[in-house]
Figure 1 (cartoon, rainbow, N blue to C red):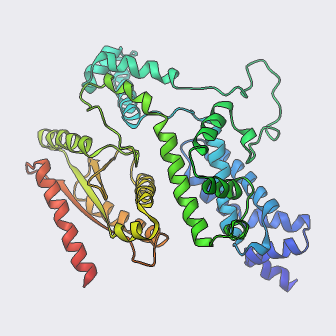
Figure 2 (cartoon, rainbow, N blue to C red):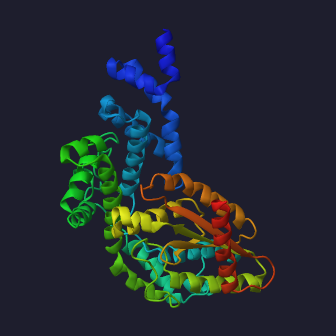
Figure 3 (tube, helix red, strand yellow):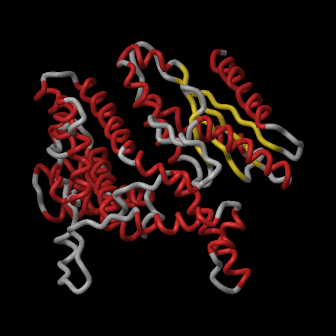
Length: 420
């Protein structure tokens, strides 16, 4: 009994005990012990769908982890289970979301229009017209017409969807599995097209890791390459896939013409963020608005140092992959209303509306978040580091160039502090 009690307090030991003697009661105990892990992962996606539904989907991932885990792989069960739980939830959300992604500028315009419509309906006591919404947010009426038209235009239904009136099978029967056959027709075609643009070795590694559930060690042994190289290929190939799939949306950018003040190239092709030109133009507008309304606003500048060590060790393509991954990580750790853009070849600029001196807190938090993230991307020839600076409008009239100068001035201070 003492051994069982020790296993209960040590989840990893409980897993080892279960695989040595797979009894149903031990499996139930594993589900209870790793319940907080399921909830923690589900909470990351809360807001996209109800938390309770995501938890249920997460438990499917946990059951898959118990079924597929290899105790001899050298990987902790908690790490393996977290990966499958998050994958199951993401797969579930992709199944229910749009195949064609809306460009960032269109999402922002739709968000503004939605907020304005809600406010105007409360003020007017009726549903506002498109002209009233357009006048309220300062765009043309045709822009609002275009936004409403694209809401349905950009939605693609899967051929696998059950039509109203058809017999519905149970939810368990329709639970997604990690096979390409479970994807919708459109998603499968997009994925196959993107995979076809990768190198043979990259395709082999991705297929073995994501569809055969092999560990990195097993892949390395199968392909006669090092584990470090497998890890690098996984990161690099996933970055390539993301950019390939993003570029599929290039044709959708013609819709930008509906928003008159945007330049032809708004999105950066590597990171998917707004371009530096858009950042500078948007910053001018936000500074002007803040000064006119005497409201706070601020910026945070992030710069990555020593990217040359990454380039020298893995090659030039790895720097692009790094910047794409860093952009995703940065967006995950700021508010939705903040505007993240490219700034220089090795950094980002973030506009924080309605934020004043607390930009210092945001900057410190981002640096703290990036520190462990960067440790996972060390190379023998040197570590990539991050420096950050901030500046804000504090009631005194400031220009965008002054803000940029103040924020960039902090790069040197932080570099000196780190060296000391």
